[in-house]
Amino acid sequence: MESTIWTEKYRPKEFFDIKGQREIVKRAEAFVKQKNMPHLLFSGPAGTGKTSLALVISKKLFGDSWHENILELNASDERGIDIVRNKVKDFARTRAIGNVPFKIIYLDESDALTKEAQQALRRTMENYTRTCRFILSCNYSSKIIDPIQSRCALFRFKFLSKKDVVETIEKIAKAESLKIDDKTKEALYEVSNGDCRRMENLLQSCASLSNKITEELIYSIASIARPKEVSEVLNLALKNKFKDARNKLLDIMLEYGLSGLDIIKQIQKEILNLDIEPRKKMFLIDKCGEIEFRMVEGSDEFLQLEALLSQITLAGIKKEN
Image 1 (cartoon, rainbow, N blue to C red):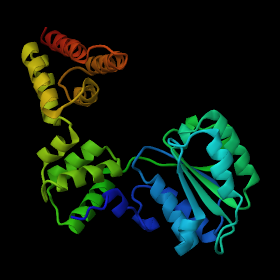
Image 2 (image 1 turned 90 degrees about the vertical axis):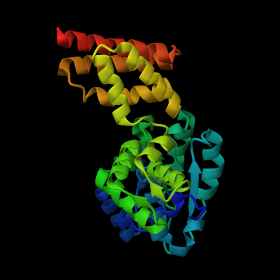
Image 3 (image 1 turned 120 degrees about the vertical axis):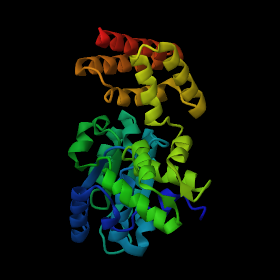
């Protein structure tokens, strides 16, 4: 097993290697073929290929000299106006090396830029259009000011589908000689929820312990309770066994090292599978939201989870009556 971080090792090098973003890749390929493009704004969840696509575009445009023609900054680390005024401007005002008439500045996590920095960036994008193109990456495009959005072609990324995640798992398993069965692939997808980077990091952590990746190992490393165990807690509460449900929930939290905020999200998912009326399911999901808010505001986590279990128990009692 190599010590290389897998998210770098398996980063796509070609357009066709980027999974789950077919329409976005087609548009990016068209820009590369023309050797011309507008400023780009990549928006979407983490681990879906935004940085990978930016690097593939740079490599395809500039070839071997791509390192000299791209400036990669993480705006969550360097988010002030001085970064735009100094570092970005100094790079933008110099000409590109090679046949392409512009350089690329890639700003990752650009929704973390302050409003003042975004206003300064807007002017920089206007003044240096001949020598530089910007690729902005963010999780929430609504946090980017309208003047910048209007200057960019917007690319909206989506979570990877189960098929795309499984294909990536199988590719890694073959390259690293790992044994992964179908249940484990399902568990990896459920835990990563379409975030390919999270899946790769989790798989690497498991592979450091054993070449045979099991479902139990996935949930253990991810510090997430198995859906079956969470379902058992909820069904105990529905059967009016409140104490048993409370004790099992505490055991699960201690075994996996879960916080209240971690477990509440899993409970919310499993509520949809309970054998109760749809109206009661919606009521309990609403309660999950309320209790999560209370936890964030500083309420005692286990006390709030007990309150939720009591509501589930009451829903079961009403069902019997």
